[in-house]
Amino acid sequence: MLAARRAGGRALIVILVLIVAGFILGPLVWLAAHAFATEWRYPSLLPSGLTLDWWRTVFADPGLFSSMRNSLFFAPVTVLVSAIVCLPAAYAFSRFDFPGRRFFLVGLFATNAFPKMGLFVSMATIFYGLNLMETTLGIVIVHVIGTVVFMTWIPAAAFSAVPRSLEEAARDAGAGKLRVFLTVTLPMALPGILVAAVMSFLASFDEAQGTYLVGAPSYMTMPTEMYSLVLNYPTQVAAVFAILLSIPSVVLLLLTRKYIMGGQLAEGFQIR
Amino acid sequence: MNSMTPGLRLAGLTKILGGRTIVDDLSLDLEPGELVSLLGPSGCGKTTTLRMIAGFLTPDSGTIEVQGSDVTALGPERRPSAMVFQNYALWPHMTVAKNVAYPLKVARVARREIADRVAEVLELVGLLHHADSRPAQISGGEQQRASLARALVQRPKLLLLDEPLSNLDAKLRVRVREEIRDIQQRLGITTVLVTHDQEEAMAVSDRVAVMNGGRIEQVSAPAELYRAPATEFVAGFIGSSNRLASPDLGSGENDVHWMVRPEHVVLLPADEGIPGRVTRVLPHGHFAEVAVVARGTELRAYVSGETPAVGADVGVRIESALRYENGVLDTRSLAPLERIAA
Image (cartoon, rainbow over all chains, first blue to last red; front, side, top):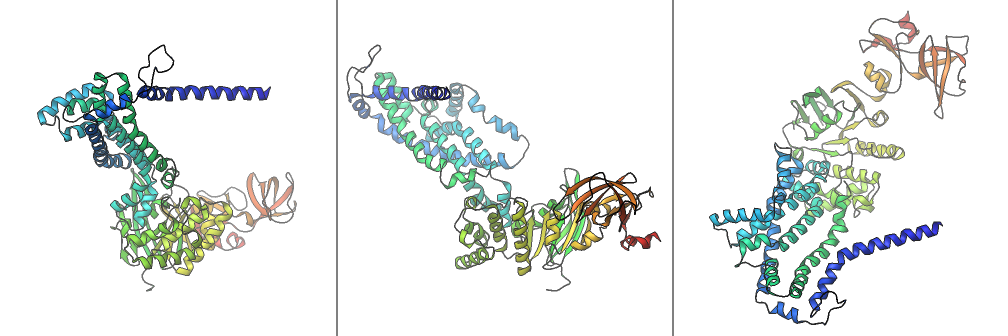
């Protein structure tokens, strides 16, 4: 009786896991199948044939490599600029109680509170006046705006998790404020900052709307290039491009997983 | 060392936080090499005082001198004091050796000398075998000693201990406090220990400063503190005592109380002394705490050997009592009871 119930419970778990896996992996499998299929339409269960034509089409696209180059340029630059702008703010939010602290902290969500397109259109109007349209700086600004929330909130939480007594112990040991920050606070908050950096990198890497509005046609990144491919070619080309677009994200996540999930940096979080 | 120059001088220290006077015109001198405990209930201002000495708080008035030089205006990084924190405050991303080496690195000591001094101090606290361990990998007692090593490696003129043992279990606490006292005496460092544990303060200190409401009620050697508490607060805080209106258990004078230690309450056969009845017996191993009601007053007595049963009729004799008028000790009552009564 008990054994039967336990087996039933296990079966339920397996079914739920399969549903979740299907939900997450299904679209990816669909993408992969389409990237190699000549044609695959409802109601046929299998693609009608396999081909590498779509890959040839994509690799023949003159915009592909320049868009890759642009994406691989803008994403790291965005992370860097965002870190320089936001990390001091994050530290201030976590350590100092200044007037309007809560207002500004919540206010950071403003960029995410409105429809993106509306925000970008009004930004574009301002950018025209400032001659920032179709410039590197203009695109970086658009990308950084999209990362501000990650780069402030997550590191602020990470800084707050560093016990004050650890900073005081360093002051007591003779270190000045900057040195305390660089040798104690920053290394201990690093896992959180790393998470924020990865999320910012991916946000920048996937940003299409704003980049299109401000950068096109001089600056095409991979997502904006995909937009034009989707409009001009069959779905299968978009599938190929989507796979290419996901490679850097996957590589990045695999690389940082090691640092965030295990190893010495995770110890910083055990103190909480 | 010139005996005229104290190891630490606190003069008129006052700190007001959020409109409340936390430390109130506190003055205290420590002899060089002396260990003085700041003892008191939570909120008495002992930690605030220590944080002012360390430099984490600026006093609203008063001065702090370490071996004759005024450090009141200096930040914590420029003071010749080193602190051991309550939660050890070891940096989890560094090994024990790196933690201990940090103050020397900051002070730009040569690398060879750093290695020597770190090894020396780790040997002193018995942690040399854990030099390359991370704080998370060693026990609480070992973390405590690593934290002490990090303070000692700076060769501080003043050692500050902030409830250093409160996170250790009872057995370990006794051992580590003996180790700390031993090292402190060997190195001859002037030391301030903050604690709320009177047993700990009494066991390791040259003198104990009992604090209450931001002021020092009494500074004395541990034995003296127990024998002659200067105020009613100290008498109630140090050890246990019976607070009576009169030593004969009758009604007393206004604003006068008598404090009687449980060991000075002697139980006699029923027909001797003041008649009373046993209401509770709490065995403590080598002695028992016996509660007796006599003339409507409950008294606690320490009894070794045979203990009376609950409900038994006994006689009570009070051998020694201290008289407090308006909360202050009447020093004449330090003499045996018969003489004051006369």
